[in-house]
Length: 158
Image (cartoon, helix red, strand yellow):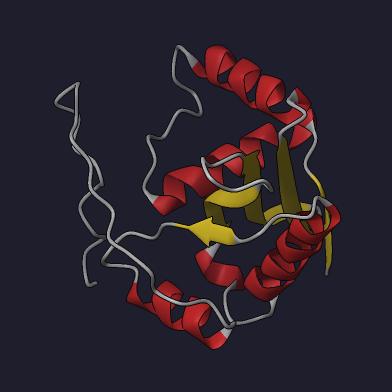
């Protein structure tokens, strides 16, 4: 298993993983080309990084980072908007490999911290983050401006 930088041709695998995470499923939709273009533009931004793990030619893990400045900090903070491992590939070290590489990138950019958010119902992920040395440090609040449900309802059985 190897973590590598994401490329434009990884779009379908990444989009499928994001849908598994609870994001809107856009593959095969009429505006899929717009979403692919947004992904490719994201990859080109200098203040972002995107990582994938491939297994047998299939994308089984994805993590992206944004390096942002916060007021009253002279160094950037690394924020992980998305970290997802395909359900079939969990408990095989994919998530740990992605987090380790994210931490290396944050170190390379001299970030003062890494942060991420996780849906309240993703209790297995929460245990994983705690096990990897992360601390629960706050609450996340959202107000929809489009009446689209977010976060999504937890999958059945969770």
